[in-house]
Length: 480
Image 1 (cartoon, rainbow, N blue to C red):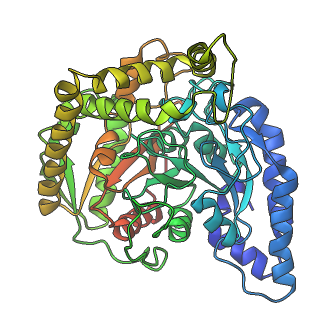
Image 2 (cartoon, rainbow, N blue to C red):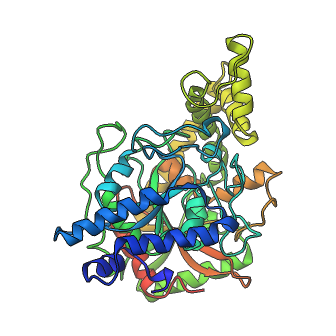
Image 3 (cartoon, helix red, strand yellow):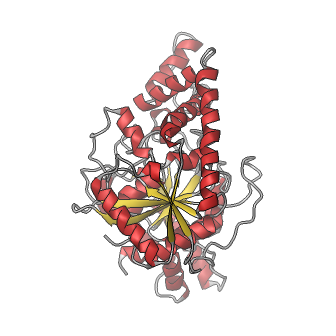
């Protein structure tokens, strides 16, 4: 089998028919990491011994005649801001460089019970703050399709691991597009579930009202299978809701004829690269061939979304990152007094982008500015949410480009924070509103760089979102 043919159903078939063992499949991907990752740098650290032990347990179950768990033998990569007991959880930051996770995140517990095999922890922009994985304190990750280009961010390591055939699937986190944008840049499927669909327990917080864990994979069916395992109420996370988790795989082949796809005119006015527009137009034709109706919709407060998002995200980051003070865990640099210790530890431990966001967030929360910035941003967030509610009265889904541009070169935007922030212009609204969003491959540039299309759905409508995405994939929508 070729790497791209490995999927949850394919692996289960190989294991159940005795055509391959979980150890053999795991070894195949570990060898690929050893061969490819010195150039791509998707992984911060990987653990072959632990991965092979997990695979051996799957093989033992099969030999003893036990039923295979739903994700049996699935080789997965885990973003390094999600706790996996016994492994370092660095968040791509010097301040946590030597911190070892003391417990499993809830999503890790559920994946482990479902038979997934954890290959290692993947690189990210420091504390998930970035759109290119160049902000990692350790090294940048490169796009597996062309090493001169970025893989997107902040889950760039996870996307590059899947796109570079060094994992079948991965977990990432998405605060403003950090699963979907790198999925687009690396030519894979990336899903941000509805806010509160998946437990955030064990995810190092960036923006608590925006963060969500989600899967990346080469096939929609893999994303559906993983979501079915990790979704659901968790008593450790008070924001997770007690809402029925449907069988996402069961609904993939349902007909999609008659579904309405909304095209927000504000997203298609300007700023989209010609090659992206061309591939999106092709995707639209494919959806029409599937029997979907395209309708124009309005999201009138879109122009305020970037400003709104960055006020809220930076305020929440400032609050969440206050815990990294050198006292409780992570880096500690002793000074002449307590104040010196705080200053020296945080100055040495945080990178430039994290410091920028902490300072901006502290400013908008400060006395005299709270009402002018933070409170006003919350009011704008409500207006954006109301825009989406009205849009979903006319359409079942909303379609946009995932990113306004194809992948950009390493270093091209690193000196221009605003240009970097605009990379997420089409993805941030899903986090502000809390709706699910998915990025699907929809072709490539003439140079072979991937391009993605984004679909947004109603709250907790992941089943139909995955159904439509799967039908698009089966109809050849992923083709260059």
